[in-house]
Length: 115
Image (cartoon, rainbow, N blue to C red; front, side, top):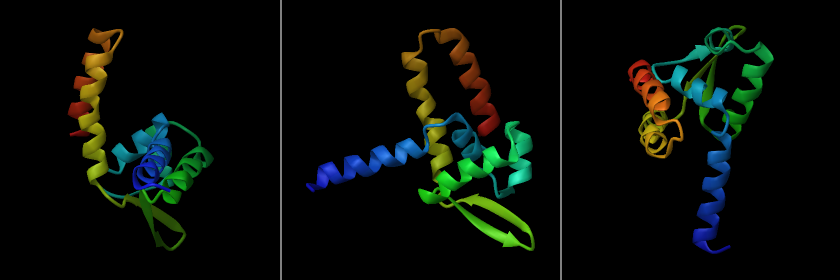
């Protein structure tokens, strides 16, 4: 496979692993350190199994790693820079928004929360 095709394929798969709102929120929750499934469940407002399924996808793409402490499993970002990268990507949302004002306000609030 030519090098550009290989890189494009890998990038598409990587971006696919990020292509769910809950996974993006998990990355932002893990921005400042590790969390267990229960704390992620509470932050995201989804089921324990839902969080576990998203973490499974994220582990498969090496976005998160885990640390076991007894029966508890704690997750952390393997490369914390990805959280900054996602925050930087909000610039593209502002420029292409259909409802620019509402999205701009939401982005401003989100940047404050995530920074």
